[in-house]
Structures are given as structure tokens and as C-alpha cells.
Length: 78
Image (cartoon, rainbow, N blue to C red; front, side, top):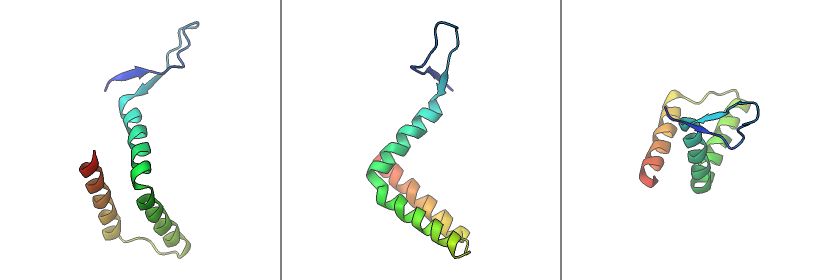
């Protein structure tokens, strides 16, 4: 995994701060998805909160379906 130095490097005392590539990519992907699929995530979050309030757990089928739908959207538009 490649490492990138963050702009907050403190060169005076030799301390270096690194941000991993995967973390950086995850942040960029999260922002991109939020811009394009905000309503999708709002709906998923609404269902999650509703299920917690109603003391009803989402079935594994629904969770898997949501994950597959998300992966489909990501692969179609990246």
C-alpha cells in the first residue's frame, strides 16, 4: 500500500504524518457517491433508523440486496 504525506507535515521536529491510499480513496469515493446518490443513502439510512426504532432487524436478504444495489451503482458510474 502506498503512503502519501499529508500537508500537515511538521518538518521542524521530524514528525511525519501519512494518510494511506485506501483511506484517501475511501474519502473521495464517499464524497463522490454522496453527490450522485444522496437520495439512495438517505433512503437506506431512513430504513435503518426505522428498523431500530421498531425493534425490527433488517433481514440479511434486504442487507445483501442493498449492498448489491450499491455495488451496481458504483461499477456503472465509476
